[in-house]
Amino acid sequence: MSRVVAVVAALLLMLTACTGSPSEPDAPPSTTPTPTETVPPDPGPTPKVGECHDLSFRQAIAVIGRSKPVRCGRAHTAQTYFVGRLDLTTKAGHVRRPDSRAAQRQARRACTSRLPRHLARTPLQLRLSMAQAVWFTPSVAKAEAGADWFRCDVVVVAAPRQLMRLPKQTKGWGEAPAITMCATAAPGTKAFRRVTCGSQHSWRATTTVDIPGKDLPEEAAIADRMESTCLDVARADAADPLDFTWSQESPTQEQWDAGQRYGICWVPA
Image (cartoon, rainbow, N blue to C red):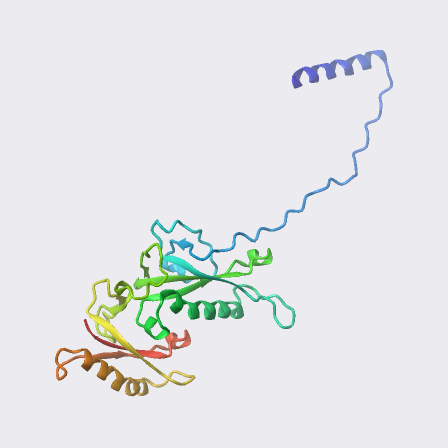
């Protein structure tokens, strides 16, 4: 149909030229602006409690959450147990970035304080577990579009840089022997690696000892503080109270800075 119209239009122009009709000047282009529709930026979906994610170890330690949920019946390594709102406004009225220290500190405190309740363990009991809280915030672009959430996920570090596959539901799962803390060798040796007790291991963690102070004490001072507790626990655990082995592990400076203010007592498995 459009081809016929084009042919007819061409014929009309030819007839007009033959009859000598005055040509009309071309109409000036319209200067009226074409209205454009403003599309608001998309903040993206807000995470939900109970969602599962199949994270790699690298994704688990990232600040920005970019993974999409998967069905919890499928293989996954993380489950969301809390979703909160970030306070991104300062007292001076400025807006914080979601990856700022203040925003990340807010998410860390909320997530770490709620994990024991989710797993039905006390904070002291959770120290002897390989379960960890990780948290995520929206990207800067999503935050500028209105996203103000933070997401708390539970993960289990099965071995160095390796996450464990989780069950469909992790609520109340803290007593599972598979996530308790063991090691491949004695603390302080080159072969020492923390693993879950469900993996091959030769040592297991028995208890922890709090270390007071703002700064990390000297290693000798930590050893003196931990010795009696580790010794008593090892003796009580041994088949022969006169013949037993034990070891203790002091926090590194990196662990101390990350909030680990305790040492760990170990015995052979």
